[in-house]
Length: 391
Ligand code: NAI
Ligand code: MG
Image (tube, rainbow, N blue to C red):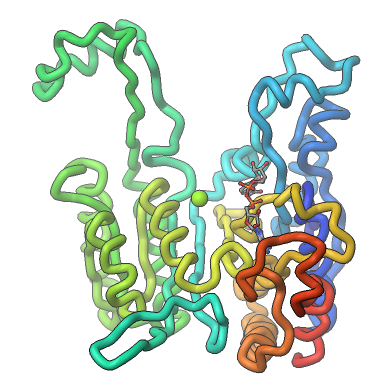
């Protein structure tokens, strides 16, 4: 039997992850779940939000389900640390970013699919009225490099400044003192570009998408976007049934509301992928529906896009939407060759949404709080129960 590392983390992560496991059990997926410590409690008690024992568990079992973590600014983090650990050099870092780096989880997949009948679906004005395009886009975001690689300086050291000065375009900045100069680099490697593009083409082939769009800006970012584009054209030759499209990130954001239903698989660098995946998620229901996978060569971690929503963590019964977490569990099933079970769960979610009787507060466009039940909102657990009942 498979072992899954279950890492609820903080806040509503602790609420939604057990709901996903209830659904996995109900669909007949047999697994052992081992608990992985991660998040704020472990920062406070141990000075490490990502304890080595959790890394070891993932290294052993390869597959993780993750809820959400709470991150706080540097000073707040230092204040909350156990007094016995203060001033000993402990520094807070985000454990999910830590996991992505440690296991080189370089491929981030964020499907954005509208469910028929979801009151949060995007609608578009037409000549004669309104229409509701069904969006089915899957964003492949490079997760480890690009503009978020973290290679940046304010007041760059002399060697860096000197190296930059070798570029003719630096003439424009020649009178700017280094202390008034901030530089963030956008680093793209051929290897990581090939990995994400190949993964995206394979996904398109497996799930029957007819086009793959590289969403970059090669006319301006000639080197980094340019390298990704060149690799895309090479790799596309191996996938004759899938058309390679390219769009510029800025134009793509404009087209988002014009023809989102035209797009299938979309590939982008880290920051552009961050932007485009939030854009598409907004068309299909937002954070209550946005699921994701972080996939490396050995380890994969599946998580909703949302955070720990601390303002709702104490509410009992809970109001938050478990669907983003449950859809993330479906992505896990796809990844380990259990697509049939994933399909069943997605089908059950579709039916619950289309029937429209069970809705969490976000689906009713209510302001969150305990009074949402008075307006007919369902609890987190009622939503899960409804999904299980339709399995
Ligand atoms: P958030 O995603 O936790 O919440 C933003 C708002 O989205 C909430 O107030 C709520 O209205 C809504 N929301 C989120 N999840 C929902 C759900 N399942 N159902 C219905 N509505 C939902 O982001 P926020 O408030 O900016 O950050 C809170 C904490 O989460 C911070 O400490 C932040 O650092 C952390 N965070 C963690 C992430 C992760 O674990 N990957 C990602 C984003 C934020
Ligand atoms: Mg984001």
